[in-house]
Image (cartoon, rainbow, N blue to C red):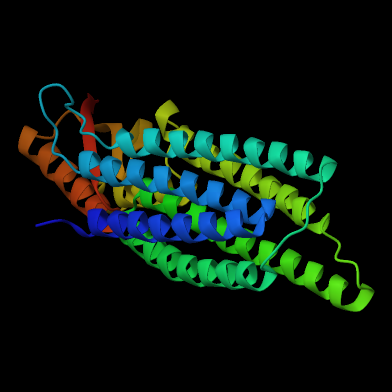
Length: 292
C-alpha cells in the first residue's frame, strides 16, 4: 500500500502539471513575461515535486547492508537540489524581465491572465496546506520543501495578478497601460524566489553536516535521563544528529561500579523508552561506563 507521504507527493506533481499547461498557454497568448515567469516557476516546482516523490519513497526504506543508518538523508539531498533549482529559475526570470524592460511589448488578454493567476493561487493554497500537514505529521523535509515552493508560488501568483490588474487600471484611467509594470512584478517575483531558495538550502543542508538536534529536543533527551537515573548516575558526551526524519542520539552514562549488568541495562532501557515516546523516529545508543 502506498504510504501517505508518497500519495501527497504525487498530488503535488499532478497540480503543478496542470498549472504549467495553463500558465504557459495564457502566457504565450498574452505575451506577459510575468505569467511566463510563473510558468517557469511552476516548472521548477514540478521538478521539485518529482524529486520529492522519489526521495520520500527511498527515505522510508529500511536500513540495509550498504546503508546501515537508513536512507533518511535522501530527503535532505532532495531539499538541496530543490533549492538550487529555485535559484536557477529566479536568475532566468530576472534575465527575461530585464530583456522585457528594454524591449517593451503590449500585453493582450489581461483578463485571462488575471484569472489564471487567481486560479493558480487557490490551487497552490489547497495543495501546500495538504503538504504542510503531512510534512508535520511525518517530519518530512522533502514534503516541507515542496510545500514551501507552493507557498511562495501563492504569493508570486497574487503579485502577478496585482501587476496585471494595475496595467488594466492604468489603461482604463490614463488611457495608456503601464506595461512596464509586468517585468517589474516579474523581478519582484524572482527576488521572493531567491529568498525561498536560501531558506530551503539552509534547512535541507544542515542535517548533511550532522548539525545537532534543536535545543527543545535536546532538553527532552536530558530530562528523560534525569527522570530515570538513580543516585549519583551522570552522563557526558551527548551527541545528536538528524537524517531526513530520523533522529540519532548517543551518550555515555556513568553508573556505580557496584551495579550489575542487568541494573545498568534496565536504566538504559527506561531512558530509551522515554525518549522514544516523546520524539518521533529516534534511535538511542547508550555506552555505559562504571565509576567508583
